[in-house]
Image (cartoon, rainbow over all chains, first blue to last red; front, side, top):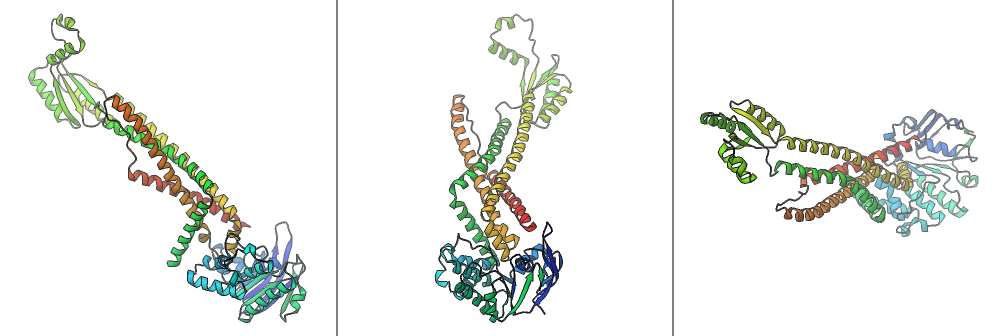
Length: 218
Length: 302
């Protein structure tokens, strides 16, 4: 059974702008795929629908067999605990350490402290930031900050990782590093959906690519 | 369960740290709440004192029962028995017409005038002390005694008691109104403080929602903040009221000494203090609840 499936999904914003039109596709568990298209094509909107940040106007968005668009508000937090989100503008908190930033998803979901701390360190180790755990994120470079976001997204061991332009504003070496991390997560069974307009980066992996053009899937 | 306690402990320490980080703003908020609460609490205390004074006032409520001039000894004794048997009477003192004349003589210095009278014009009388200053009781007894045989006239000095009672009732209503208004003010202060706090933590709240925080989780620290503000404000109010009473008591002590009496204002008892604190905490909590709920509702809408 598909872990994510969209059926005839449309999204229209107030004011009449149609961001998505009758989009349908399915993602198998453990798959990694890219979502591409020009800017404004609807990539971000599509990811937001899957994470229940926005609601579709028509069609069904199913995650793990649940219709996300029909979810009660009280059920949304529990959906999101299964998702690792790396979104643009999803800021790091600069009033606490690197370690505490990664701890946040575990604290929010009520993990016991010792177990949480162990997992947070493991996640930091995976993205190569373990020796910076006591630093303030503001002292990290752009690439390191993005790696920290990735660590925070995966620390809860989500079944699905959604990433929106995770390599934007990074130079090629850092971008490769980040994409390699997603690939590594995928190899241990995590379903990964990456939205990016960087065709060169996509070309390095032999993965399925979905292309959006003015809200329609090509 | 342990995780739940850990969560609450964390929220509480974070909230305390947040308050400590901006001591000036915290102090201002706390004193605003403190002053708002101190007013009704202070008036309440002073009223409570007036009430207890009126109960134990040195001028006990009493009725003067004057008998008809032609009352015979047996009839006087019958009236005395009825007076002593009435409910709510604490003591009955008989003032014979001769005693009354002698007293008048001594007190007025009108010996010549009195001596020139052909006979004693004063009637026998009873002074009846009542056990409480309840005006209804005084009214009731006055009517009852008037109907006794050979009773010519009953004079009640309960009018002042009744006026005082009405004044106290007015005062209590004023306290209730003041409490309601200033309770509203307290809620408004916490509402706004929490709103400001929410705005400064907007990113954090948004992020927490994205990583699966429930509404309860997001509300919790703000509940603590609101309740803590209420508690600190309540403590400030108690401090204001207690020090105010202490200062007043010092001056009142001097005044009372000059009048040879021992008058002082009673401090609120522990029950009253705890209720005031609980009310402050509840109002702070309510302000926080309204503020966070409003924000979450707005956030859910976008």
